[in-house]
Length: 410
Image 1 (cartoon, helix red, strand yellow):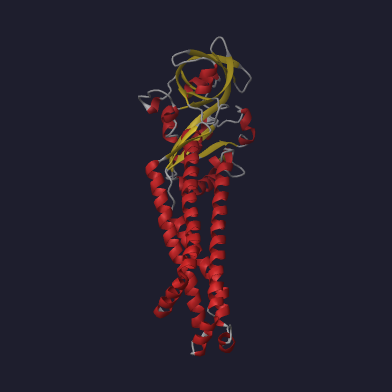
Image 2: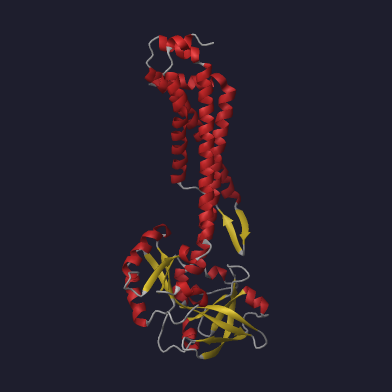
């Protein structure tokens, strides 16, 4: 077998120019997959990280039927104190869950005594919210001495677009007017603690207040929360934890429903597009390898018909002739893959050193491209498999040639 490998490698470089051109094409395809895959995976993880760590959490639990009416921010589909306690018991007993944050979400009117606008409010316990959304405090402009107290009772955080639209500044007093689930209207005065970056663009009007102020504003006799945001120990376990919680809390008889961030955010479609683009690039790679190996092996067999006839006449079995040509195609795929992976990883390393910073919507994104080892293994195995597949037909044809016909070929 070692002799077969040596002969196959020697045959590859009998036509050095053609071999190098074909290898370069295959290597380019591998580089394309490695570099694009690294950039795409980094972009996707950054987008998901911004959404889950600063706004949504990894999972959310609501009262059944709430998500269908989520645009209206209904207050009649809330978790009562006893329901909240039962959910908290389940969450506290799940080792995969790092933290969770009960919230009251509702719409209100905000006024600076001269102008009025609408606002969406998240009423939270700041210490729980900070642990569940570890990136949220970074969106707050200004110095926050204690992240666990980013908003206190009597204070409000307002998105920058509303701050600019209503000509507000930190320290100003505003009035919030809201209607509770019974239809009663109430108002409270709050002081602006700081402004926050709006990650959802100019239309984002999400402010934050302390949950105690929401209870007062909505005239709640007891705490009722609209949703529970959840942060996992390991984000990769999202689907497993979601399935477990749905089994425990989301049965047909249960009043709860569990959703992942993908089921709640329109940005999930962007991640699916990124996944589709990665698949397209991988398909292009396979096509490049298939056509390249098939072409060079077909030409190699055609040019060496007389040689094939000679070694067949000397008693070389068809199986060994088949192996010889298969090894040639496999060796070309292997060498090209190694070169492509090394250059691709080198390009990603350079990008990591220089950093790629850009703005996506209103989100500042800093890409640090990297590619999982599993993707590298997938690329290598795919190229090897396609190399063998592409080289099989010409190799099989060579092994089936009759010595007399091959020796008489001109």
